[in-house]
Amino acid sequence: MFQIHDVQRTLGYVFTQEDLLLEALTHRSFSPSQEHATVKHNERLEFLGDAILGLVISESLVAIFPTFTEGELSKLKAGLISRVTLAKAAGRLTLGQWLRLGRGEEASSGREKHSLLANALEALIGAVYLDSGLGAARTFIHRALAKEFSDLQDRPELSIGGDWKSRLQEWVHKNEGASPRYCLIGESGPDHQKVFSMTVEIRGQVMGRGEGSTKKEAEQCAAEQAFAQVSRGGTDTIGNSCEK
Image (cartoon, rainbow, N blue to C red; front, side, top):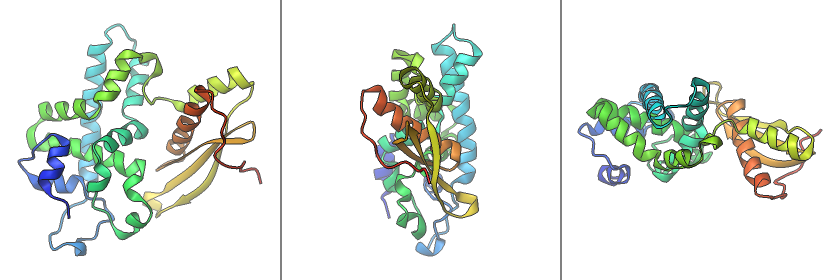
């Protein structure tokens, strides 16, 4: 069991209602039998945190980029609230080590899954909001996404972590005269909590692999990995073609 004060020191926020912190870090797979106390799982707070995050990101982008169109702002927002971006932010906060998981998620490296990390960060945002209000939630969001906001202001055209599939498509078409090909290589978990694994190929070579709670999310993760490699001139493959 983690120490509450250790988590709060890492997060940079001290909860008045510590039960909200426990709830935010508790995945639905966690069994109450693993502890004497019964704690709710974090999906309720995740729902609330998602709404608060969208509001804060929207108001921030409007203030930072006063001349941008609705379409341009929407692209930037999509990048900032994507599962990939939120998982990276959660990783910097070391949320993985604090998650309360069931044995199945522990065994399947749940602490490293983008979907679980992103959901936990959204749940924490919801918890901070309920604990201290919108101002505290806004401060927490800007602290958690400080790197993304900084990168965004330096190079907004990159649309931080945005539509990696589109960016990879454009690069491959321009430089290779071809199109990326995505392949589903596996899926795991119960129906309500599926994890999909996808690869992306360029001219028959697997250049990226990713996972997510939807096929589209997994494709975006794979595309991000592939784009990072090809855009820096890398040609190393990470596997064989999924061609049968």
